[in-house]
Length: 247
Image 1 (cartoon, helix red, strand yellow):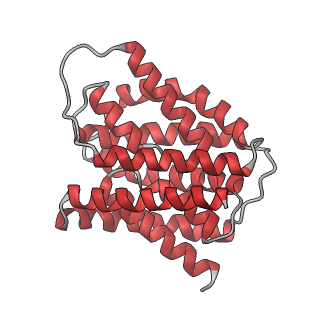
Image 2 (image 1 turned 180 degrees about the vertical axis):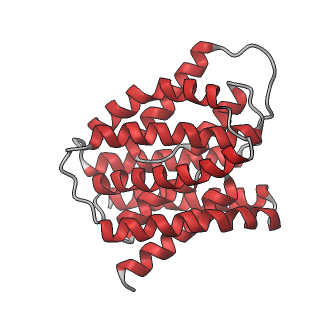
Image 3 (image 1 turned 180 degrees about the horizontal axis):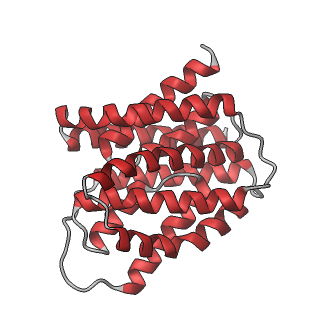
């Protein structure tokens, strides 16, 4: 199977997960790039940021059109993550590949466990500025360091910390992810990482198309069922990555 076909298939699967779950699908982009397309961990995390940014912008347009983006809240939340995203993005290119792989496996496992936990409903009351800032900074650091969008972290944080409804949280998380990803990419500019655009371009295009199909898929399959299946896939990927490093 050629690299082009693998990129198209992997991109479509990840897009389906993004569209069907409203976040979290990008966690599979890095291991797909590493194990299926022979990217180094450093190149995979950078390429993932490009894929995540473009896909998030595309999805954000649709959510904004439907009025499902809290712009002021999202911009304030993202502002807290810009500096951490840039610092983490600059740091990641200087770390050993094994460290990046282990860190990513841990984050993937945590994302899976988060998906398996019961979802919290939006709360009312005063928003704690310190908690909101800490959550935004943490998300920015994860995005910059590992090249993931962080929707699996952003959506729960926007619901539980900032009190948004789930519908608004999903749309607003795309705004946050876009800004953090752009900040991380800016920090990685000039790092010398070689990127294979012949793979990244079709991968991204397939992810965008897959995300639209994922929205339709989510209407046919119960959201909780789809989320649990994806969580178990993530756990398996995390375990595989850890075993690969140890071996």
